[in-house]
Image (tube, rainbow, N blue to C red; front, top):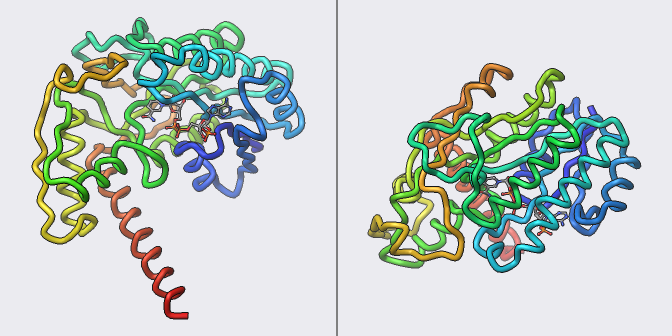
Length: 304
Ligand SMILES: NC(=O)c1ccc[n+]([C@@H]2O[C@H](COP(=O)([O-])OP(=O)(O)OC[C@H]3O[C@@H](n4cnc5c(N)ncnc54)[C@H](OP(=O)(O)O)[C@@H]3O)[C@@H](O)[C@H]2O)c1
């Protein structure tokens, strides 16, 4: 299977490149090779590589910045996505587009189903919702995969930021009244490969790791697990203080509850999602191995 992935240096795209099986010929393109805002770039990329599937992992993901940069957020997350859908249509190519829990307003108290009404709170969510709608209008058979709270041992994300701050500070304040589910890029990549393997899969799916928690719970789990693994400086103690969203004002309003129901995904792929704390331990272990390898490499260089 030939697979074209956009947003080459993004955290999800990197994982897809790492985890593609030998049965997949994967080409990942970065912004310089294929700026998705440019319809000609996109059409040329899809026509030249002639993939069976395009995975759109490129996005404008700066949630707060989007509030004052709506034009660019829409250019990437709505127009860019439309360009990809049009190029896929012209080449008779399948499309899997990645979207977000931020299309929901967070007022529910039970997990969101793929069919639930969307009502984004901020510009980022609205631009992603517009992207979904353009895909649905042009390619009803495309797959839209919504996910949430994405992190990975590579890239910029909450887990990496917390580890850096925990190494630097003695006290951290983290929001306790936004509930969702941390989701690792390996879970997402595995899900994406399972979905594109299933030629019957189409429409909206939800994918996160299992369970739920607040950003505060996520930070505490990172701290406890990182300490147990020796990823934080020895004897480093950090107090993590739960705070309300109102105590940490940010430009973009976020959903207070955005847990996603993945039963449709499980039914169509057979995948069973694992608890986010178990998956977090695996990502932190990978980081430990990478850190040890980097230290070993730098010792080798300084001994030469
Ligand atoms: N991160 C999360 O917590 C989260 C949560 C829910 C859903 N999602 C969705 O998951 C998907 C993957 O997110 P991620 O965390 O992997 O994002 P990411 O790490 O921010 O990567 C996004 C990539 O898109 C690229 N990009 C931006 N504008 C582009 C353009 N005009 N043309 C081509 N490439 C462009 C960026 O390129 P540069 O490197 O050049 O900037 C970057 O490499 C996105 O659809 C996102 O909306 C993410």
